[in-house]
Image (cartoon, rainbow, N blue to C red; front, side):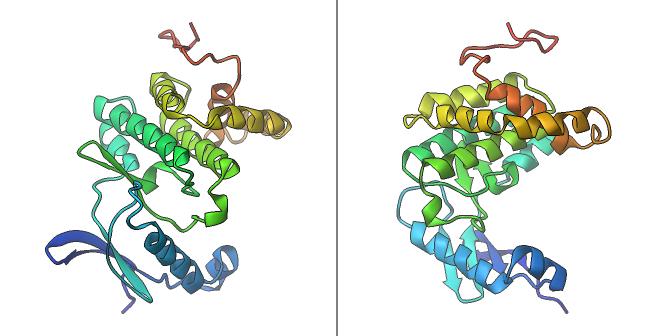
Length: 240
């Protein structure tokens, strides 16, 4: 019988999640790398971040080959799948995640891949999980920029357009951004503009049914200097 990779557990009365080394075939090994090395890097990341008062989960147990993280509640993705991205609970979770990401960057740390499924929200508290992509050498403004673009790209996938939920998250991040990361992200997107220009026709025709490709246009618009920090949308989706 195959070993369960992630499962609920209890450690000293504290609910948590046990994670073990992933058992993968040759194809995934070639795509992702040695799963044991990746797992150990993630375990060491959690160990290194304990006690730093950062929005990462507490380790309840850790040993070679497995670790247990304290339960941090449902992911933001699970909340918006259940409630909707434009619902009060969905928007609250997204905005809280944006603010927490800015605070993480302000402290000098990057997550590596802050997608909505890797961010938990419970009782008003954001917790970042899944540190497979965390690297200490990414704890710099360049790493923060990639965090920011990944995060907002995932929000645009969830919403399907540039709307009030996306702008509320933008405002929350910018209000807590003391290191100019948003401005850096704008510059990065300007450098990537030729790539987006090539991809955009694909989003109109053959790939219009793919949510990931449909998110490219709103992401580009979000990081355009033409969208002011106080921009709002009319009911039809046009900027006021």
